[in-house]
Length: 323
View 1 (spheres, rainbow, N blue to C red):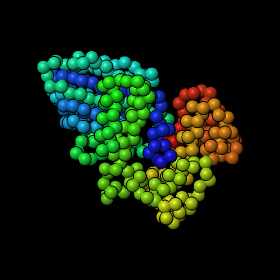
View 2: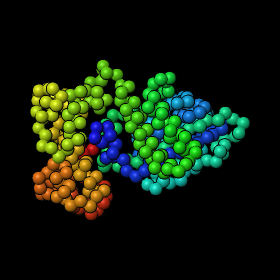
View 3: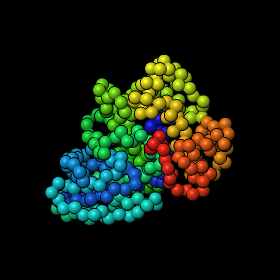
View 4: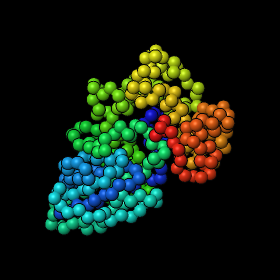
């Protein structure tokens, strides 16, 4: 898998949820934080995003807003409109974002006002499997609509909006798949829009650096391989020293430290989501024996992998490298 796809596949848990909502002015809806990431897409009309801490942001048709940490915020037809709490229906995973806000047609305002149609939703992320890639995103990712720009993102929005407006046979499979596609297109759009010059550190720079992305792709495709710094540098055409220096500057940790961290992230997922024997998990993440794997896991998190699986709970003592 490529790096971005792999990160999302590991972090995401449960099913994403969404709703298509039509409102007539005046209206205002507050959205409390939820355990994951939220998004809003304006399909028709205009509205305002009102962060709890920050200036209002005007939104136009086709605009996409992504909130990677789902901050307390609101949507309204005007910054001065009074806000009400959303009518929330919990998802299967217990998310209360308002993403299941299900109003009958025209029930969210007066018929005489200007209509706005929005597509709202949320993704649930496992905090224990969080990747630093998302930490580099701002609290609010605003992708304004521009003619001829990001056609794949526009297509995903159109398809998702159509499925939610007129649920047909197969919608239960189509909607979650389209939500996953939308998330990937949103992240791809933001990272690709970052300036090539002047971004010397961070994941935006790492994903745009051919040498670093070659090494990351190797690690993510073959995490069990016994990589050396020299081999990873060779993939990108750099010397060992130059590669190690650049990788550490952009990714935030040395190459083999990142490799170990990513192996432990995969191990957490396997321990949580499968009943594979510890010896099998060990081999899948690059350890020749269950004993060596158990030592590495305990060194990283302060708990034995078997105990972690049995308790089925959060890690009690994650090391800084795991955060």
